[in-house]
Image 1 (cartoon, rainbow, N blue to C red):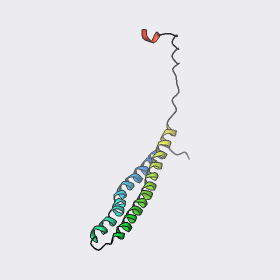
Image 2 (spheres, rainbow, N blue to C red):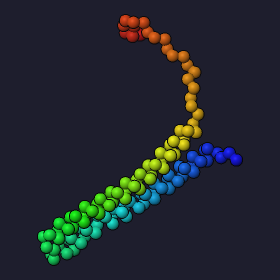
Image 3 (cartoon, one colour):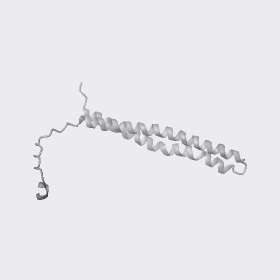
Image 4 (cartoon, rainbow, N blue to C red):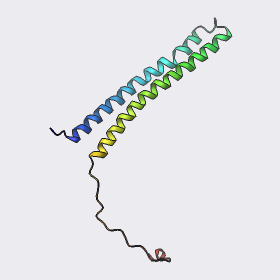
Length: 116
């Protein structure tokens, strides 16, 4: 049984669009979970913190930022790979154009291009 390549491309396109929409919906949640807790806790208990607590908070902030970068890079990479698969499938399904024109004759040496 032969499958329709256009339907396959559309299926891939819909999957890529759904994956991208899911990524965009979840991105703000990831950013809030990473960039909100540490500064909020520091502001909340700033009067009880010793000086070395700020170093711990800074390290935690950097650690959370690194975790976000890793998680977000993987999710963005999935979206890019899905879109690349759609583009490659579309390119593979397109017919290759055949050149039907003959190349233009070479101009004579000199300044023929000035005369038009």
